[in-house]
Length: 171
Image 1: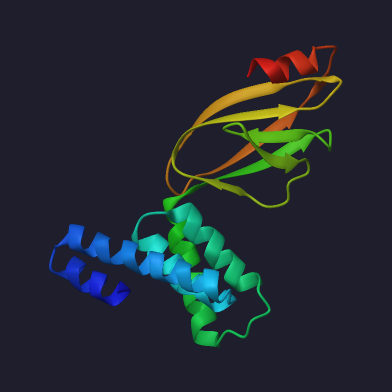
Image 2: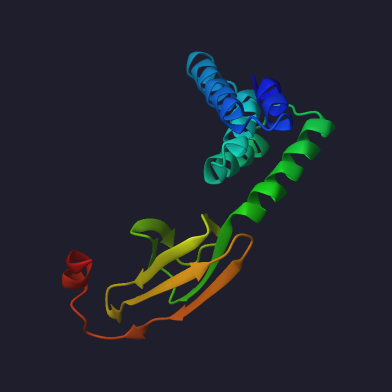
C-alpha cells in the first residue's frame, strides 16, 4: 500500500495517496499488535513519515535502531537516511540547565530532569519551556522554532523562596 500511495503521488493524486498511507499504517499497526516484531517499526515509520507524522516516525525509526534485531546494512543505512530527513522536518531543543535535578517541561509535558543528554524533538512552531526545582525560582519562556532548527536553552536557576507548589498549580 505504501508503493501504491507513492504511485498516486507521482500522478498528483494526493488524497488517494493519503488514503493508501493511512490504510497501510493501520495494517502495519495491527500486524504489530498481533505479532510485536521490531522489524515492523520500519514500515510503520515509513507510513507515518509519508503522512507527515514526523514525531511518530522519529520514535519508530529510533526504536528500530535500538532493537537488537538483525538489520541488514542496507536497511540500517536507509533508516539512518530517513531519520535525517525526518529530523529536518522537526525542531530540536537541547537543554543546558543548572542545577542538576531540575524538572524540564515542554508544552506542559515533562521531558525529564536535568541533565538531559539528548535533544528533545518538537514540531515547528511555538513552544512553552519551563524549568523548575524546589528552592529555586522557576523559569518559563515561549520560543518559536522553525523546521530543522536546533535551539539550546541555557538556564541557570536562581535560588529563591517562590511558592513552588502554587506556581505548579497556577500553570
